[in-house]
Length: 90
Image (tube, rainbow, N blue to C red; front, side, top):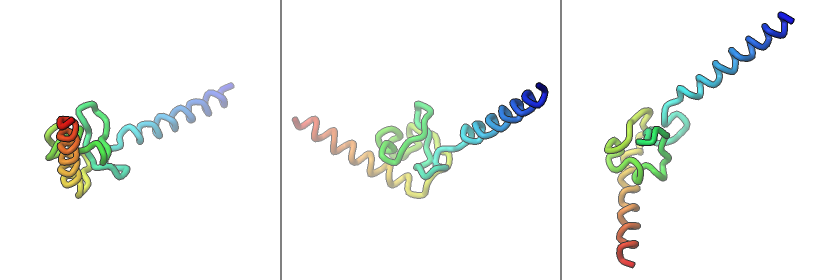
C-alpha cells in the first residue's frame, strides 16, 4: 500500500512541476508579439493593433517583445481605421 502512495505522490509532484512551467511562460515565448492585453491574455499578431493600440504599450504590458511588434501594432491600427471609415461611409 505504501508503494502506491509513494508512486501517487511522485506523479502529483511531476504534474505540478509540469503545470507550473506552462503557467510561467511569458507572452512572446511561443512566437507571439510579446504583449499581455488588458484582459490578462497574451495578444496575437492579428489583435495587437486592435487590442493594444500603437504603440502597443498604450493598453498592453510588454513581456518578451518581438522586434517587429511596434510595426505590426501600427499597421493593425491603420487597418482598424480603414474598417471604421468603411463602416461610417455606409
